Image (cartoon, rainbow, N blue to C red):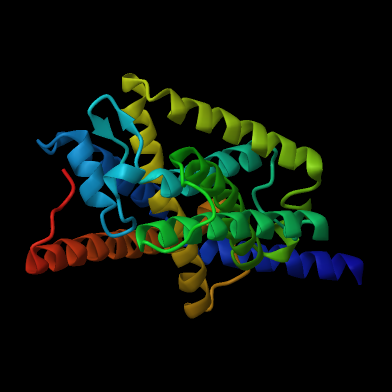
Length: 282
């Protein structure tokens, strides 16, 4: 019976692999390459292009942004923290071998991640009260926006990794264990975030372009990861991938959808600002 069951599993795997579209991994990579080439070939400054690309995802308030010389990052301080946190959390989890892992963190770590989001909410509310001319708790600072954003970025990255681990891959190929396995992992994440914060706070000119690219890639990747979940669920392709390459077709569609969303949000905001006669970033 055991041999027959093993044979059925192997046949199922072979069937799924045979039905998997070929060439999609290359298409996925080529889209990213085309995006990079188009971004750097366009004649405007990196600051102007990055601000335009992410215009629909962030308020981009100049007073809330980090400047490197006379040019700023494409996200304001809080969003820089969020997407920088997503990027660094993903890099650390990848280095720890947590890709295809679907286990929830322990309760204490989940509560800590939720608390990080709550701290950002409190800091954001405090800043909003000041902007509205209402009583507020303390003087907002960009460094607090950055640090609370990093905490929220950690929670967002863990959510996206859990989403992909639970929806994308077949149970037979998931790695055992939790995505975040203990407080030591949290320590590694906080160390990585400290490094990001230190780099941003130097406001050293040569770091602006690499950081801007990191933030843009992170934003596109986050939205693509969320879209991937919808693509797999709506296409009834969940829990079928036997390897990362099997996700390439769905990931390509998710990437295109994410780019369309980013473009439509940015374009819509530019049109609204033009209609209202509001200043645009530049």
